[in-house]
Amino acid sequence: MESMAKVLLVEDNEMNRDMLSRRLIRKGYEVVIAVDGEQAVTMAISESPQLILMDMSLPIIDGWTATKQIKGHPDGAHIPIIALTAHAMASDRERAIAAGCDDYDTKPIEIKRLLQKMEALINWSVISLYFLIVKFINNFSKKLLPLEAASTSRWLYFELIIIESGYIKNI
Ligand code: MN
Image (cartoon, rainbow, N blue to C red; front, side, top):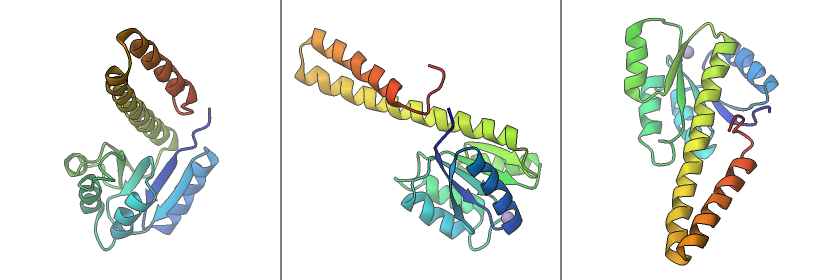
């Protein structure tokens, strides 16, 4: 199944931005674009993307600072972020992870490798969200229904959630 996830691409270099966004759109992603760190923070909250691709070297505020701000915001903390940098240095990777990035990739982008990392993070966050919903239904139904019915309805809800999720491919 083609992914329909919304991705926020943060990149100040026009050529990199155009090339990567075109490739992602071709793969079925919805792409929204920010061209500096400040815009990245604003759009992470207003657009609620399912994933952020974050260039680290950016004008106004850099990718590390933008990541910290997004991860520190109640509406942004759950959004997975992949850091993109031209430097393959280990210290850059460590800095990105320390800032709160969930993964890291180096430029020039190798699209197949990046897509694998993106899919892994998107699927994982969708599964986590559904487990949260199931936990909520679980707690809720325990209060309202007798034990047997509660247990049946829980599994029914769980199956519906899995079936209705267009993102989960291999469960
Ligand atoms: Mn840059």
